Image (tube, rainbow, N blue to C red; front, side):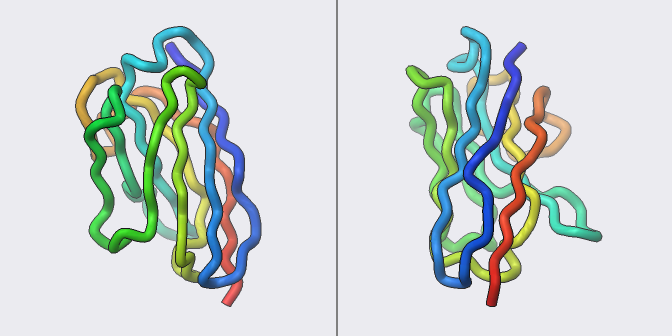
Length: 124
């Protein structure tokens, strides 16, 4: 089973960009579909983006409207979330997750391993 560690969060002004990284330990990273979720205070954790084990298939939450891009580098055991045109409502703790499946999945319960999260703060 992989272990996940997120990085790249921080404070950014509205309209700015951040790139989150999620480093996975273990030699089986490429057999997992990966996803990013986020949770704002007082709200439920919500799906942001997912990517298949090959990286060829991706899916995004409808509210993103093309602002975020998920990608992965299986040689580096890392998945990324490029976030552009950030808005104050994007502020949340962002979690990386791994699902023991080859296809993209979007439901919380389909993910098997979670990182500890990284805080993203967007100032207006």
